[in-house]
Image 1 (cartoon, helix red, strand yellow):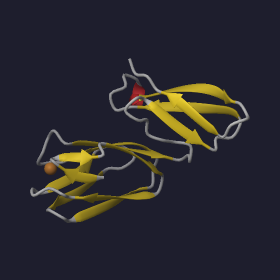
Image 2 (cartoon, helix red, strand yellow):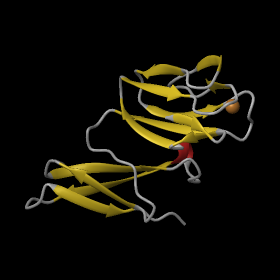
Image 3 (cartoon, protein in one colour):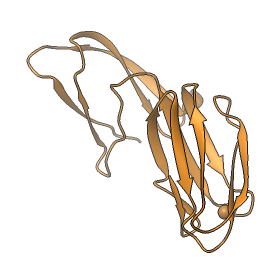
Image 4 (cartoon, protein in one colour):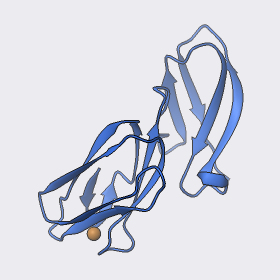
Length: 140
Ligand SMILES: [Cu+2]
C-alpha cells in the first residue's frame, strides 16, 4: 500500500492474517502511519520519499490507517483468516474461487457500512458444479 498524492493507494487492501504489508512513500513530503484499531495498534514515525516501512498483521479484523501530518489520509486493511476473500471491483463484484460446497457464512465489510464493525453477514449454501462464485455486493 503506497502513499502517493497524499493518499494511501490502494485505499483498501485485503490481506491474509500474518501478512506483512509494505508502505512505500512515493511523495516528496514525509508521511507517518498510525492505527488505533484493535487488531493492530501501531505507529510508524515520519519517513520520506522513496523510503518504505512495513508492518505485519497477525490478527484478523479491520485496520484503519492515518497519517499524523495529513489528517485526510485514510487507508483500510482488512486482515482475513480465510483464503476465500476478495475486494469487490468498482461495480461491486467479487469472485471467490475454490469455495467448498455446503454451508458457509458470507461477510461483507465496508468502512462506511452502517453496521457494527462495518460488516454484515449472511448464511448461504454453496452448491456444487462450479468452483467459481461471483457475488455482487450492493450498498444502500
Ligand atoms: Cu502524510
